[in-house]
Length: 172
Image 1 (tube, rainbow, N blue to C red):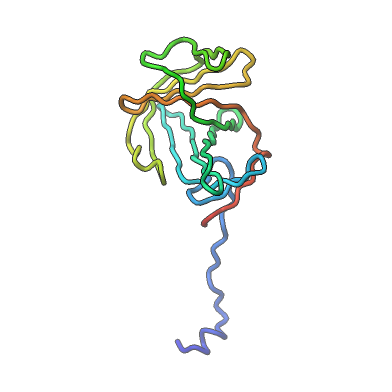
Image 2: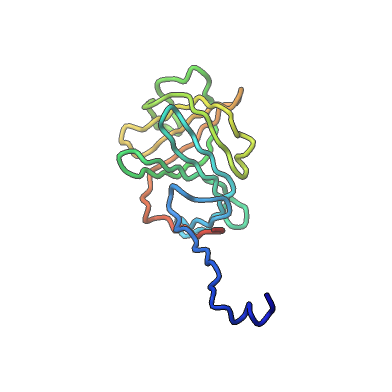
């Protein structure tokens, strides 16, 4: 096919429409605006415990100054949370309660999940984590505890609503 026939062809090129993003289909490279700050999605972890699945996205603030985690799960409704790593000495077996900054958190759930990692989380691909979720007495603050090999990580979090996020697709 010559140049002119390509230019004047009645056949339309296939257009790729970007898939609209939501908290359950965010991809590496997407931009998330939250609390008037822009973050790039640099990691994604999918957790699977039996037939249940939830997601955590590693968000790096523009300029590389701060990392936060966005958790997303579909229970009866969409549940979202923002988490930051904190230093709390926790060991196995996980305790029934944890006190952090003069606030007590009570264990709500515990289990083992297999993970799929992407981006900065790709080194976790196929691993298993023993996790526990804790909640304060007002059900406003949360602690998430996860063991990765011999290391135990603790994150402090709180719930947010979907309207607080703006998701800009970084790819199709």
